[in-house]
Length: 299
Image (tube, rainbow, N blue to C red; front, top):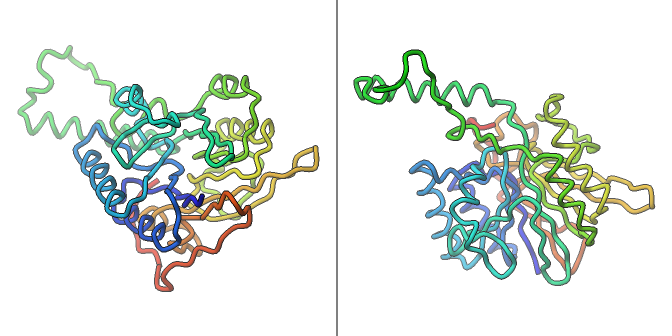
């Protein structure tokens, strides 16, 4: 079994199609995306994105799995699809699109996996400010009818449209996972483990460290052979040694081009990595020689 691991896609339909084309070229069985997928089904554009991804995946015969990042509306995922699961416990979002909830465990071809999404958004205040601007524009457009009946001076709660209160995991989430000592061979996360030290780290702010520490707790407890994540938008590989002499290889994946304008040395193939369950050796993943990044915006 071969899996194409993918970094942040941020709702970029063109980049998801690029990933699917790479999956066909590299003869993989499925794509597993590591958070900031672009799950915004509370907006019309988010519905169109999911439908487009599903059509593209169906046309290529490849399923797309994802876990949640800090910019995915996780609460809506579980509310909408929590009762609709496949044989491995993944939430069926579309016929070809599946979601792995935080703490979800499963096995493929004798390999034990654990998914642990979530991270902290450093741009929380900017996102809430933008949501307030949207609300104020709507008030003006509707001749203030949207504010009718609201007490003077009352400000609505903007959380849940561009910034999601459930974005970050909790210590209780980790405690609940660690209550099960079953082995974990491969750990998929959105955030990075605390102890890794990539050359380029856009998430080094002290506010990011508690969630990274939670990921590190899982790495230290289960000592998986592989831990893969996104979030940094930067491609790197690092070995984390454990006291018993074993080690965990960490693969950090880059993001879609529009979110990578500030990443040094970025190449589009840095946004994916092939995991072969029959061979732990990393597999080269060739891409077009002309793949370069153009300026865009994301965080």
